[in-house]
Image 1 (cartoon, rainbow, N blue to C red):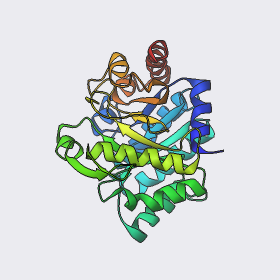
Image 2: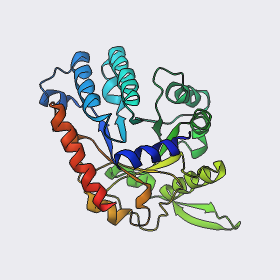
Image 3: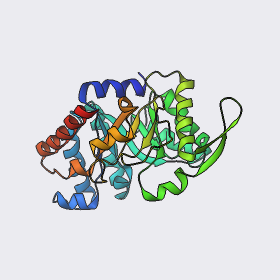
Image 4: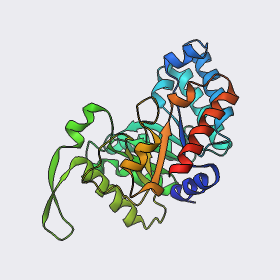
Length: 282
């Protein structure tokens, strides 16, 4: 089964919500945990036990595990394995982007089915050129995995690159002026079309609070939409930004759910409230 089909099945069964597992130092402290590998393991295990059997998608942020060294990577491996075993689709948030054999090595690390860190999908950065992502795209396709490509993010620094304009070749052989984000979205669309993947296993990352004016957000695959809650995005923003592509949207929230911990029942209740609110709007 392709990633796009697995994601669609999970969303149909569990609702349209992705919960980030982001063990910020401040969250560890708020949960009464030490900022060390043991605290990280307790945090992650609690989040997985509360959420991975109920929500469609979980998204561990690799950086917060990596900062604890080898022990943190071991916790990340267990978090990914346990989440998938509980039935959640796992998007590993690594935002990798490199070239040649290095990109291939990253792809092997996260997307091969026999890898210790094998996830359902990863996030990647296209800003070394979209074709630099080819090892990720090919490895994902060969292993039934997915890729989410950064396109239009809500951080203020992103606009200087993502909204810059370039002259590109049009499908008719002429030229057209598009933003860099528009070029990325067009490349994702073309990748899904070339694969003939009805559900789309290549997605794009578009922030919940961005201005999408002039952009075609229908990429033929899912749209991972971070920024709900702590970053200021609301469910109403989703209807405004993604009005024409709401069935493609996978909203993601992290701190607004995780702050309800460390009690597992409260974590699940916070996620369920947001999922139900999203269900009435999307």
